[in-house]
Amino acid sequence: MNRQQTALLKRAQIIALHDMGLSSRAIAQELAVTLTTVIKWIRGHEETGNLADLVSAEKTAPPTDPAFWLSPITDSFRTEMVRRGPFIGKHIQNELIQISNKLMEDIVIKIRQSKYFTLILDCNPDISHQEQMSIIVRTLNLENTPEIQEHFLEFVVVEETTGLNLSTVILEKLKELDIPFQDCRGQAYDNGANMKGKRQGVQARLLQKNPRAVYVPCGAHTLNLVIADAEKVSRDAIGFFGHLQKLFTFFSAATQRWTVLRKHVHLIVKSRSDTRWESRLQSIHAVRHQATRIRDALVEARENVSDPVAKVEAQALAEEVGSYRFLICSVVWCDILTIVNQVNKLLQSASMQLDVAIDLINKAKTSLALYRESGFAGAQTTAKELCEDMNVEPQLKQKLIRSTKRHFAYEGADEPVGDALKNLEISFFNVVVDSALGSLEVRFHSLNEVQEKFGVLLKFNNIEKVSHESLKSQCAKVETTLSCNGESDINGLELAQEIQNLLSVPLQTTALEMLSLIHEKQLEECTPTCG
Image (tube, rainbow, N blue to C red; front, side):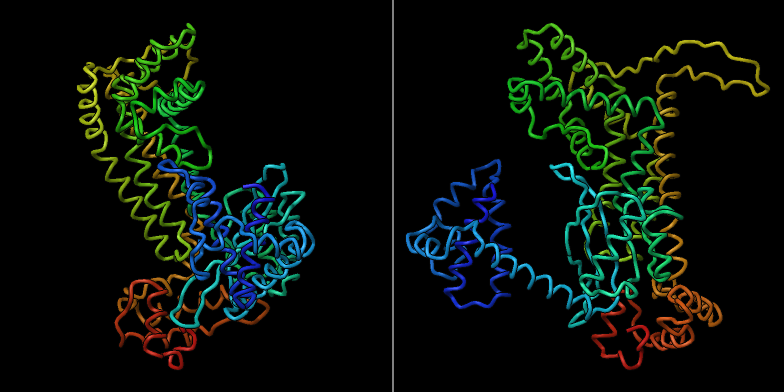
């Protein structure tokens, strides 16, 4: 949808909603929902073109039906638009500015009411090659039932992505919106050096301004880096993803080849992405569950193409997809990425909590450790079944390695593994899984440090097993973490006493559930620190 079409739809809806006598806030909400729906409709989907649904919307629908605002522009709409001026003119622009300002005012009011908040920042270049920083504020709404909310504030164009410039921009933006940075209690960014750097990064510079703004790295981005680390430790892993990219490149090079692929499969291979590992999981799923069909598509494409280079490439890819080594790698990577992706999806939830995130990471470690024990044997069995479907012998050939001259060393060289299958298990499977386990431990170390500081607030279900002295020590640690310039958000001794008083009520699993219980039982006066 181009700018003119978007402005037209905005103009038409605003006129209609004004005629209904709705308030500016109601108009803003209706406009946001409608624009999201319209953009989705214009894009269309695989089954049917949604544009046809938009054009054929009922003209006789009642005014309360959203289809009324999305129907083709009627004469009354057109007449009103001519009277008020062009839909890309100053009047419509002023109205949209007023609506957006009203939305921003409401968001800022919610942030102030919540008092404490967490900053979430991310930088990405747009299509015009300008670096844009997205600013999101995460709060806890206590109006009714305690609820975690995330509010998008703005895209800000930044000239430099250094820690100094980004921290300066965000502080100026918060000052402009009259949001006190001293009320910030958390920072969440990716793992870039300019963001998480301990001396020059954004989090370090903001911590100098407000020591209570605890930094927590983005869990989803960290998991992506865990898989990226695992991919680079094995030649078989690198070669596997290289062949996946070759498959996509070969079929996407010509529409005729893509048609052949679509005829054989229902899951399409995806292009390589360095940041979105979910796209790689989709490609691996396509190969893992459709290896026979993809091989048939390559064979058919080889017969149809006239270019001799393309023929050779199709033949080589068909042989690789049907090889025992490739099938074992596809099963192993599919299993590993499935374990990681399940956690990755949950970590991206807007209501995710620190204690739940740590529990998910620990469960991922446990699942990978169990997979390390028996996963390779299961991968062999599955790969053999795939070979039988292709009528291919499940044989693994030992790759010849060129001998190189070695200098004298006191440590003797490792004995070469003669069995090709055992060599694949050692040099590929064990190395990849061990790398993922080690990377999970190292890259989530900062998350464990935050857990150490706030552990007493994250383990209410085990609080009965903690001694009184240990409880006071942990509460004192929370008080120290939330202190700045001699002032603290809480009193450690009072917090310890309130937690002991809570032992008489059913202890919930997570901190948010405990907070919900306090509000449900109206225990705020008894537990002012916890509630």
